[in-house]
Length: 489
Image (cartoon, rainbow, N blue to C red):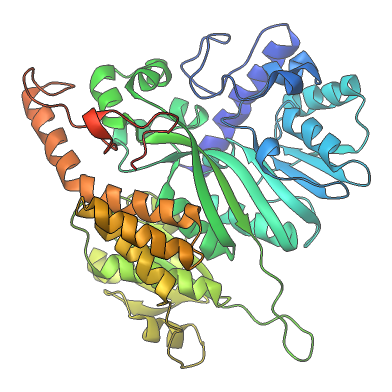
């Protein structure tokens, strides 16, 4: 998808939505919504007290998929920036949370939305707000000037998310926080969806895989990265947001994306600035990876990924933590990145696709045709020749054991290692992640073969008389635990 094409249609659609709100209508993120129809992505995101305290036009113009201000833990005196601020709902809410002494910026590229946001600011009587015109790939603020960045279902609209994350990292102060709501995908997205411009505007086609999202944040330099699902979209939701895109095979596509898209709250933090003894910033090298066509940017999807790829993805994250600026481009998903790089184009013209993956350091090719090991990557990036620090610890061992107990359906094992992990001070959040990872790995082969069988049988569900597989539940009787989002144990 060409970046300029995406920007043009986003501007047009969001400008029209703002004009409609000012004329007395309602707007919606989803391309399938008939402006006013309840939408599975944007509905019921704000509490009644929040809605009552802001202008109705700000609520109607809300195009988000979450409520980042409620989760960002804002404090008085902080400076907040909302990327893609739309009608201003999150900016106004944030401004009140950081008062007294704080300030909230809203950044949007659409004149109609900026006009509507400033009008909503005036109606709300909030003074510590400033709305800026600009693009989230080029934030018009100086380095190290913002405490917290929020965003609400906007980053997935960008065709250059790596640049968005680098810009966010640039303007955040050392120790600053990223706290955004976004639509995220788990697994492969049908190409018919990726190609539909209407679904880019509808927050779906441009959604990153959850692993890609975390990888790109780490590559930009962020640490303490976390991703928390807040709303999972099922097949019936998919039919709603696919209907307006002119697709004829709605039932088939809806079944393929059932449970794969979800709204998530994404957290990350900018570390303290690393400085030398002379007090100057360390020189940062840029390492770029240009991959052959793969299902996602890391190539680790599916039940049988190439064992080299998970190791390489982990090594790139390690490089990013050492201060190397890492970018990764997949030919299947980002052909524009290949076309825009003259060095890469020349290599492809000379050697063909066999030269992929290409690895560039400061725009010069340093490796082609294979994925180097960590030690070689460190050498190419100019890092000191030292062995990486071992991550093994008794706590890590217990997390591995908890995952293994889930994979082997061993209830006594789980209880035993759960108790040991608690005594070692392992958090419930880390144990939950171990359980989720183990369950996903365990279910992946079964889910794949069931999907294959259903495609051959041309059915959306298992034949009568056969047990229906629950995608992520191990509770007795095949029902999900109450109060959860379909998670296991």
